[in-house]
Amino acid sequence: MRQLAARQAEERNRAVLGRAADAIERAAGREVIPGGDGQPAEELAYDLAADVVTGSPYAQALPELVMGERIALVAVCALAAAMPRTVLGELERELPALAATMDAAVEAGLAACPTGNTACL
Image (cartoon, rainbow, N blue to C red; front, side):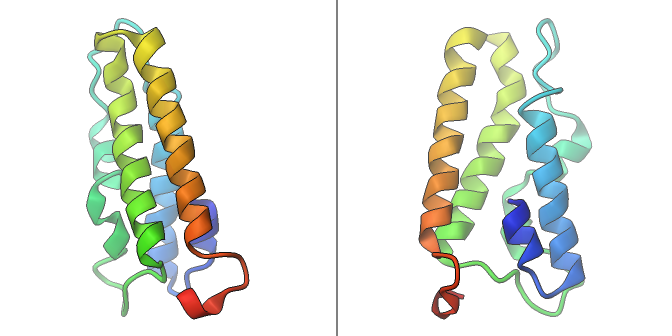
């Protein structure tokens, strides 16, 4: 995620993707609270929304992402948003499944645009 953010020419899009990266880390870690209500904080839900792929509404252009990266980005955000809810069910079963799926989504996103291949942008 941070690689995607760093690649953006527009500062506003870098900021949106950077906030999403922070939200993913928080939702996958500190927000998984045994005995909690299973709901991510409101600002996390906002930063993890699927419209992260459109970047900032104030930017001049969409973020520079290929379709595979966009799909992976939405998947990772959705998975991160679901992680706090695992405390309401079977944490030991659900959290590893979400984490493994998130890892696979990240790998798919990385494979979508090989480093140095500017033709896919």
